[in-house]
Length: 147
Image 1 (cartoon, helix red, strand yellow):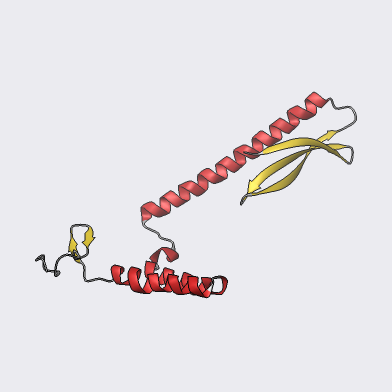
Image 2: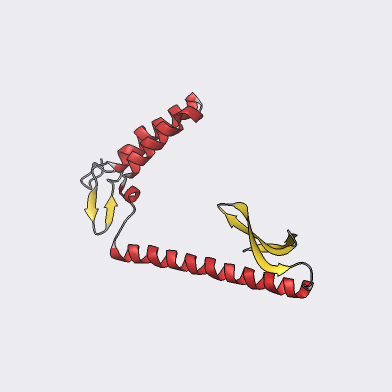
């Protein structure tokens, strides 16, 4: 939501809009073109409301176009290049990047989890059935017979 107020500056009314961008509030000053002298507060407020409404409509149109573009790309099959990164490669890269900020024991624990649990689970000798990948049952020898 875009909020704002009416301000006087250099003997002219300005519409001051407060816009949230990336979680931070940005201020945008837009001149109304109305002089402070000889303009009623009601007329200045009406000009402010009109400017705010136009700005909101512009922002909604931009968001609508961006959403339509993203939808079109998904339909056409275009993908983000980062979407092709294997999960295990992402985890290993994250682990190396996080190492300087982690305690040694925390890093070692994460590394053990990735190398000892996650990686073997992802790269087990799986059987493909339909659209699912099924890992061998822990209670069987892999051929369906109980060990």
